[in-house]
Image (cartoon, rainbow, N blue to C red; front, side, top):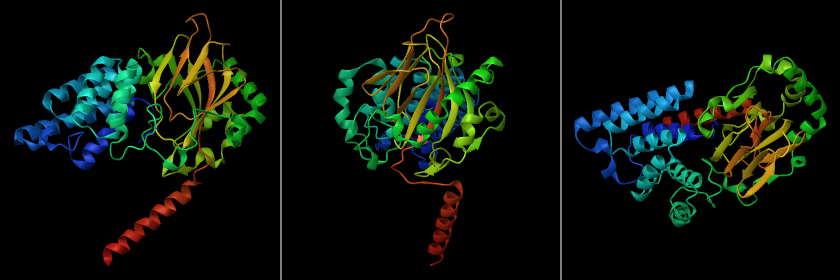
Length: 378
């Protein structure tokens, strides 16, 4: 799955699980499963899942959550008792800011005994966004005791959890503890110079962030990115503008490697326009960290909250956070008056996990595949 942080990631995960398991219930109670009824109901469910799949493609390619929501509603009309379709529709409602509607569905799914972690995570998220702290406190013991759930706090609910890292997890970290951020510090003057040259040429090339549904109000132009490295690939044209970033990071395994079977590395510039709020959300895994280095930051205007801790972004300074904790960002500046916040953004692996090269990863996969073939012949 993509390393997205928005509702779309949960929707994709739900779709994968539905097709993989051929089950339509978020709980273990098959009575909620539409396909367990008549052939007509089974056919309607297939049509509903095709709509969900099509909606997912549209949202992934065009970031059109309005169309995704309409298609989700149509799917729900075909299979109104199908918990997986309900959960998809709820994720679309949450993406378009209809928190009350999303909450109603997630609450019903929870009361029906939902055990899917993505449904439970979304329920926790919508409770945070609605500030329904009493309800969250009431349901949390049940959520935490659900089989397969490894979360220890309602402020720390990523999709995937490496339990060996939980004991020492905290929202913010010392930037000087990591090679990635020490390299940023050593090269910050050159990085600032490259940034000024880039901006003097117009600073073009920013595109809507892939997690655009996290923008409060849904205006995708308010949060944009300029990608230098993603999905194992350095972008040569963009890197020509930022040699001070790409050259020292190109062979750094903490960015380019694979850990726990996943890529996590990304390097980009992130632009947040004044007046923008990124709503509370969890990162996808707990074995990566995020560095933000201030390239253009209006003083005392942009604040990030991670868990229960808050910090200001600062020009020329680097923040390191564990984005698997609940986090949100406010740019309190005035649109049309104050400048956007632009940071150098780097996702990198927690140094306490084993990270391997892409070549090593595929060698291991091939070896495991050969072992499975041998086992089948016996």
